[in-house]
Image (tube, rainbow, N blue to C red; front, side, top):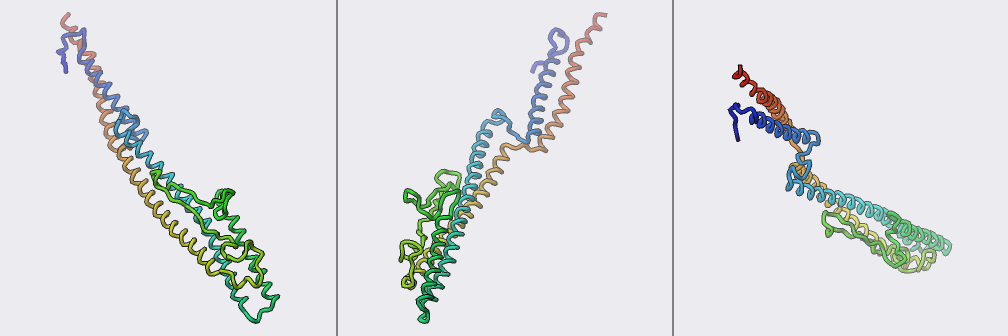
Length: 281
């Protein structure tokens, strides 16, 4: 760094140096003030190029995982709707089992048996109504669509596109499939009651409910893991991006003092050449 004795007044080296120092201090002071204003250590790529790139990558990960958490919630909702439908069907099947056992009574006459068959037909029709009405976002979960396909969709439940979970309900729980006796509800007569495969039907529905319970538990674990990963990634990103407010305030206080001293030195450097005017008296 060049220094001047002050004897050369055409070029005031001391004033230029003080001015340069004041500019540098003011520039740095502005950086720290911006950090305090935004709460971020990195406000542009020039502040820390590598840190900026890493933090943006972390932000992308967090946003993908946040969307995955939403997907997990939707999948849980689908399973919740389906489980409610299966449980209602299971309750109806238990009632039909009760009616079937009641019909196996030698004291029953034709009128009584026909009445029981009529009640079972009504319950079977209700099962078919449930199969038709159980929907999520307007899509039927149990019915077969126009193309002959049952509900089978894929949810992304992680950061990567390959982290997926298939949600499908392949079991046919219509009355005709469950009872394996008649094509449609309403066709059951008294002589069909004993042949209704109600135990197998109950088992079929309970198996589906068990599958739902297992998958919901998986989704709960995935949701917990995603939430933990988001928190940890946010903490890592914070260490890179966020400003240490206490440290920044210390720097601002230091730079404010340096600004004052630099300003004073600049004023003194500008007035120093006037001392040589006394040589001309």
